[in-house]
Image (cartoon, rainbow, N blue to C red; front, side, top):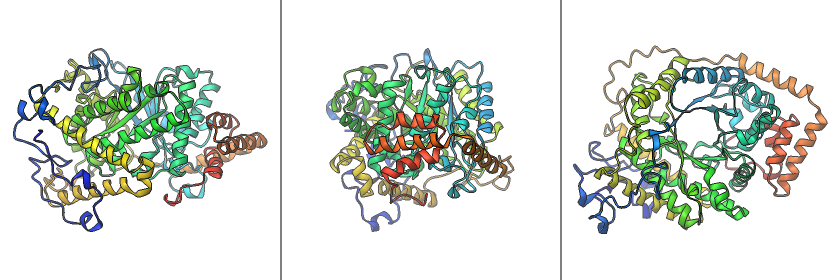
Length: 566
């Protein structure tokens, strides 16, 4: 049996009561226990390398070969030897024009790299919640933490002069994802760009919003229906587009352990697969375009093993649980972003080092694309200088370290294989527990995911406050905290007023009858239980706004009563 022992509560009895949840955390020795609570042996060898005693004489039999089932060692045979990961930097602030300039800056600074370059779009809070910029609830938030997008004209300005038929585009949007994607497709249509050529990813993972990030609009059941609509529409119309990026990143940012992130993310993905198959879709028609998005945190080997275990769990689930026949359906392709929650306001230059190690873990774990956080993200939106350092971190990793020269370089390590096995086993226990309670939606209504994440976050907080977990510059080595002089990117109020002026002009100049017809079409599709994507694309072309289209669906689906004030 593996010598990796869990130092957290027994997964078979995770429904602890309130008294247990608030009890003092068990003191840990950070030299021997990982962030997820695994006790680590001083050394590893063939007798303690696997979770199954019968495999002890063949400790590496289960890992297979790169590019072959179960893909523990990577989804491609050659991995980075022939093609580096995509360097996908996240950007979005202020107006569409401001973000368009940042996109061009990123593309210019990526010239000459052997890696593919992709753009990742961050939207402001009103957009994430499906509100137009002039909505009273949007006051003071427009353009602050992302770009404000209300209309198809905004979408044109956001991607102006960017060859979206050649550059892959990722859009971090969830509650109103189908609307934003419809605007993007409508924009491409007006630019004469074939949908067949569009490559990119719509995050569109609404289940994790109910677990952690809270940016949901409709009830869980209706929300999942809309995700299935986008998956179905993508399978029929956009062969290069990933219609959903099943995301553990925000689960981890909310305080989960790496194993919880692994389990909850994969089970969310399984929930979407089940819903699509209930719709009548052939699993092999959509599964190859599902993608994933994981966090890369500070616990170096846990992050590597998490990605290795994730590929194995997903491959087995797709092949044996869902009966997928095509090998491409078994692959778990993933984007990785370094851990924003690990960055500190104190001594922000230290964040460059943290991000570098986290990026290395993502690459050694076999990610397909990577975003590196900027050092100043705890202080405000990243400046151009900080973004350049973050991008250079990836380029140094790709071109100066040699990590690309062999596939899965840590494969076969006694420790790495033991930890991969243990994380797989524990994640599968979580998955079975979710299955037994009726699935993810049922677990949402029972508060299961929030309770699990809250307990893990509480334990880490107690360990940090007790000094059992050292955070350099925070609870140890504070010298230099008195000097925090860094440039901070400020978003002027004029961004909001100018956006609202553009929105008022947009409404005054459009054909009101045509816009009303477009909204009526959305309601009719929603009431009939039809796929809403065709009606959303048409409404975008009819010049309906984001908030109007979101509300048209809310007229049918309602808004989730358990949600935030939005």
